[in-house]
Image (cartoon, rainbow, N blue to C red):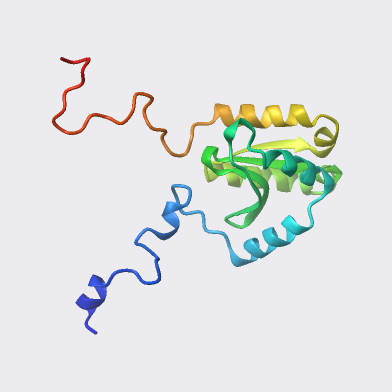
Length: 167
């Protein structure tokens, strides 16, 4: 097969010509290890994560969340991809050793990828779940959506049409 013929062939197996760009508006490739770790962590969640996930699955504020979602080489506790918001649940281990410095570096990395990171103490989830949900919804409300929403008055006029307000 010639090189020019190869260039003309359509993508195979439903790959399309954009691939990962369709998911979330940009390419955020996660490593195979990150996917495996995310799968394992979804199965072995701790109590605050399970409690919060039970509520986030109900789509508070009409936002969709993912649990133990890989972003590049990180696996985040929860993510609202449409608002590029990451929610991390911090237990007592996050206060020990070099963990605070690691969290700062990780947050900076995620912010460099366009994500806002909010950290909620695990004890807050267990003692004030409604307040934690309200804080998450507020954070989502304050972020612009990744994809533009359709105009409130319907689609824009077609080419050549005059808007009623202009005539």
